[in-house]
Image (tube, rainbow, N blue to C red; front, top):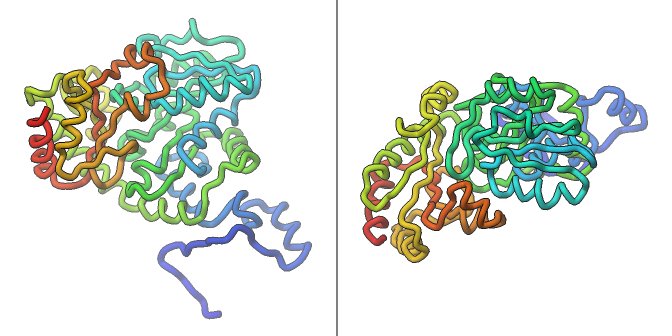
Length: 376
C-alpha cells in the first residue's frame, strides 16, 4: 500500500482492532495509548476529538462520551460512590437536576441544591461526605453567570471538587480550568459540534487522577462515543471560533431588539448592561456573551403558541446551539421534570421562551421576530 498522508483524520468505523500475535497484545497493555483494541476502550476518532477539546480548554486530558448527560454521569461517578454527597447549583439544566435527584439518589448518592444567593458561601451545605459541586458557567435557561474564580476559591476552601458545565459559554468565551475548576463538561451536541447532527459529550480534567477515573467509568459503564459521531464533531469543532463570534454578535443584536419591544416583558442576556452579572460576564468572557438568550412574553399559553406558529421559518426544537436559529420552551421541555415550585423559584414561567441564536444575518432574524411578536 502506498504511503498515505490524509490532511483530515479518516473515519475508523470499526468496533475492534486486530493484533498480529500475543507479543503485540502484551505491548497494548504495557504501553497504553500506542495502539487500539476495542472501540469502547478507545478509537482514533474519539481520541482526536478529546485531544482537540482538551487543547481548547487547556486541560490535563479529556474523555469523550456518548452524550452531554453521560459526560455529567461520568464526572460525578469518577468522584462519588454510594454514601457520598453532591452539591448542585439550583439554577441548572433540568436534565442535570433530574439525573442527580431522581437517578443517582437511587444508588445512594445524596444531593443538595444550592440557591444562587448562597452559591459562594457553602459552609451550611457542605457535609463530611460532600465530594463536589456541579454548576454551569451560564445557567440554562435564564443565563445567570457564575464567577468561576470565586466559586473555585470557595470549593477549595471546603475541600470539594468543582465541576463546571461550560456548554453555553464554550472555551472560546470562558476556560473554567484556568479559573480554578477541577473538571469541565460539555454537551458536544451543542456548540462544539455546532450543526445539530451529533449527540456527544466530553469531560475535561485538570488532574491525572480524575482523568483516569473518568476514563475508567466511560469504559466500564459503556458510555463511549461512536467513531462517526466523533468524526463529525471534530469536523464541526474546526469552525468553533468563527461560529461563536457570529452567535455572540447576533445574540446581542437580538437581545437589544427584544429589550425595546412592547410585547416583551423581560430579556435575559449577559451582554445587556442591565444584566446583573454583565461586568463579570464581560471580563470572564473576553467581551463575548454567547449565543443563548431567553425572553418572556405574557404568561399565556395561547400567546406563546401564536408566537411560535407565526414564525416564518425559525423552528421550535428542544435543543440549542446549531448554526440555524431555533426556539425552545423550558417549561415544557428542558425543565419539565421539575416541580411547579422549583420552576417558579427559578423564574421559569409560562411566557418564558429560550432563543438559540444562529449564524444567519441578524436582520433576517429580527424581521422574523417582528412578524411573530405581532401575533402575540
